[in-house]
Image (cartoon, rainbow, N blue to C red; front, side, top):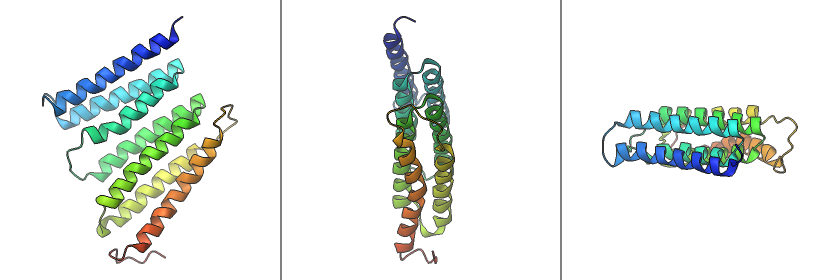
Amino acid sequence: RKFAISANALIGAGCVALYAAFWSSHALYNLIGHLPAGLLMAMVTALCCTLSLRRGSIQIALLALIGGFASPLLLSSGADKPLELFGYLLLLDGAFLYLAKERDWPILAALSLLATFAFQLAWIGFKMGPERMWLGSAVLLIFGMLYAMAAQRTKSASALAWLWDVSTTAAVLLPFGFGLYFARISTTHVQWG
């Protein structure tokens, strides 16, 4: 208890070792399947979130954020499964928004939004076809509503409190930006008034 920095560093090293062990047991050595590896990596992310909340360590929370958002990329099979991907990201964002509000770490909410936007941009740009525009729109609206509701901040003592406002504004404006992109695509055959 007297050495919080050392303890947090050991926790972080243990979590990194777990991420590496579960990833390599699937990707390198084929000891476990895709689903068990994903579930185990998600459990490590949940463990990191719990430990960061309990210990008040933003470093462990940032490690959870990196590991949580890297897991779909590290375990990607190339198959297009948007419901699973965005369902996982929705749970991940909910956890990080809760953690950000509980510990007054608005940087966590902003980074979570940025990572989610990158996934949305990649899926919409490379995987979504005109026949699934309804799915892309639903994903954008659901995530926008999640951030808009979660970022209703109370009094924040953080020097980065302005990030709550930026995250809320960005989360609400992103669906409109994508809506303009959808309207610009000539192959959609949908009138997006």
